[in-house]
Length: 95
Picture 1 (cartoon, rainbow, N blue to C red):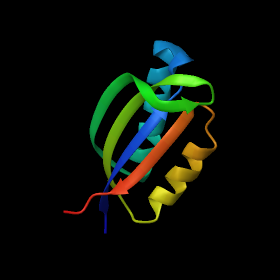
Picture 2 (picture 1 turned 120 degrees about the horizontal axis):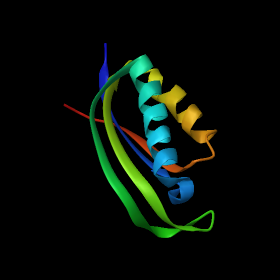
Picture 3 (picture 1 turned 135 degrees about the vertical axis):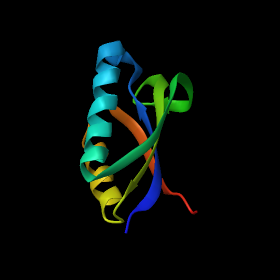
Picture 4 (picture 1 turned 90 degrees about the vertical axis):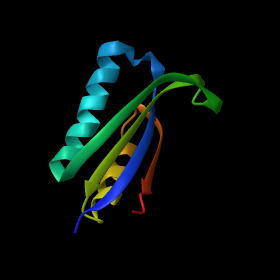
């Protein structure tokens, strides 16, 4: 049984357009391999509330997806080890 989730992640802004697009594609590819992306909302570069790893800005993306309940834990593991990701948050969407 699939559940709906929302992923918000913040990438380092100095990756450049190609680097940011590649990271977006990579993360969505991981999700699509284990579930189904329903919506992607790119917020773009925004000022962070506080400095993270000497960065004052971050590139924000929100992804809504459906997957098995066990997948978000694996997605968190992959985001945690990726050096380009400053922060992430996965939330379950109640319907």
